[in-house]
Image (cartoon, rainbow, N blue to C red; front, side):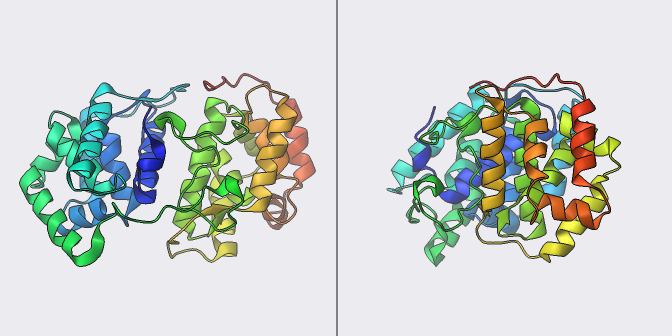
Length: 329
């Protein structure tokens, strides 16, 4: 859909978080309001700095958006796509990057796109909070002169090319709704529940301050997702979300947000194992859980410390009925 490699790493992170916001709200689309929340949650980009300086707080933005749209509780969304308005915002962001001779589209360009397009929910929320186009552009220029621009940041090699260092919130299967570059092996398809669980695992990892997503974070993501076969099996086995979250966070010593985030070998292996077990079919939460509980240094260790036998989880999993819907390829 878009030249994904032209986005800065922070912009990619914001777009991933925007998709996560849509999923959490059970919306079948990514709107300008989700982009705004993604920019704010990303936290380190120029857009987030600008909004913070202008007094735009995420809690106020979120409550305003939810009062307008509400949340579709319990609805399973199989496909999430950007709205035509968001596509226009991104086109404007590319134009803004070109206008300023920036190599990459940064979070600041996305923020300007929201305001220049002007008709989306995000633009109205921003203007109500005193962040109009003129004040935002002026703040971007001020911070940019101090060395805060993202448009010329170096682009690291993607993690699947052999680069061993972590990458900032790079999803296990990059691109998603944004049409980014597939892995060379195209990666497996995920059910709607599995895709949501993976996104939640990444979010949990960030919140806990861990440097890489492990099978323990996938375990938390599977529980938070709540609707898949894995969540049902874990609940029946007496595994509680808050206890697992506390155990994982304590083990990792979280609390400080990492500058970069990667994927631990155990989690990569678990996803690969789940894909193999799927035999070409969409990978469900059940297959991800089955692979995760075999990671003795990750999810299995967490369950053990909570007094839960991983084999008991697998037994419960075998008793849970199927029914997860596949995501589009």
